[in-house]
Length: 143
Image 1: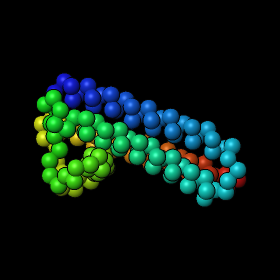
Image 2: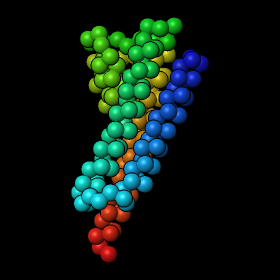
Image 3: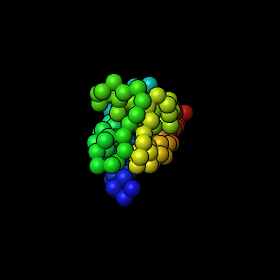
């Protein structure tokens, strides 16, 4: 249980750092880009999606490392045998979709819940960031 909490803490710190850095860099770069407004929004959305995909892959790597290793739990269900299983499970957990064809056992269940909570917070942050960037671009149009 302590090992799982340590892994979860490291993952939350890493994903928050990933998000912070990507959103900060986009925020600094946007004013310098000579793009039309719709393309600027596409840059924001692409950056947000990139941040989330990196988060999902990071969680997938943790799930794969924990799988059947040192009593940290395992992934059960309709496994095909590749890393894509862990990416798929990570994506459905992170987005709180929770399809149910794959499920964690043992301490991995705790990490799955933390991944969902972490994803919820980071998705909210991304939505807020996107709104603020759109508001600024739309505000420029009115002036």
